[in-house]
Amino acid sequence: MLHGASRCRTLATPRRRLAKRVPVWAPALVLCWTGAGSSLRAQNAPAADEVIERYVEAIGGSGAHISPRSIRTTGIVEMPGLGLQGTFEVLQLLPNRSLTRVTIPGIGEILSGFDGVAGWSVDPLVGASLMAGAELAQAEERANILATLRDESVVTSREMIELSESEGEPCWRVRLVWASGSESLDCYSRDTGLLLASEDTEVTPMGEMVVTTRFSQYEPFYGMVLPTRLVQSALGQVQELTVEAVVLDDVDEAELAPPPAIRTLLDGGARPWGKPSATGTTEREGCAV
Image (cartoon, rainbow, N blue to C red):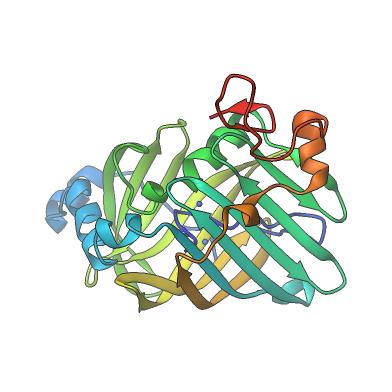
């Protein structure tokens, strides 16, 4: 489903777009770095790798998450502070292609996608745009299903910080450094091993912003154990997501094709989506794959 630390971008105002890291989303988490080393010794803290391994086991194991061909997640998105409510749908073709569709009455349809090469978004109030630089690197990294598992291929460093808490529940706070160079802070339940909260910095065309996500109400889906309640906060706004359904292996590749406005930006509209190039390779709007 919404895999990763912060797979849905925060729609901070009606003009911000909601896009897809599952996986994954409330007051900001507060770090206490001073004296962390001695505190951890007193707490007999496990190694960060042990915490991640327990987390992967708690969510059903890696096999359950990487074996589907596709995952379709649907639900309700709400922004109480702005009086907005709508629906969302996240389509994933494993291992690293995705499209997120958010529909909000009075605003319209907000789209965001990553096809394994290009990242893009379409906002009815802002228009169509392509991701580039750090924003594209982050989108590519977070579209990977292995991001949900905090796999070493996408997370280059894991560091135990301290025993903390999330909404009164004790949790181990772990600092992650991703392959793109970005960092995030996860808080894993001391009792269940599940991810309770994550904080990271999202790269957007308007600059960076800190996004905090809280995960709860985990339920089993086809061997996976996924959060069905996600509360995301950024820039003083709160966004609530409720998962209503998860369906495996029913996503058609054509559903992930970018809309015409994006195809125009990618390739001037000269070549249909997925048309083989003269070299025999399949090209997606000018990007050989």
